[in-house]
Length: 95
Image: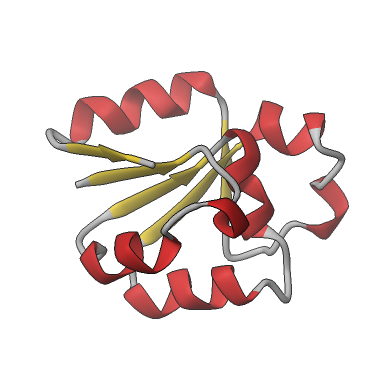
């Protein structure tokens, strides 16, 4: 399943989403959700424990000035990469 987090993990029910994610899933951080992709983030550490593949949208990272603070464990993708994820993952959960 593809999980997209578009809101800041500070302003949503992040823990509920976290309980649903498994190692077979993919998580895309976008819009304000990209703050969870920064190194040393407790939200990133929690996402890493799920074993899911982690991605962040490049335009949202750049728009928020987070390029230099991004964790190396998060793959940066473009909108084209986002489309490819939606083609591969048949189910989608958005928060």
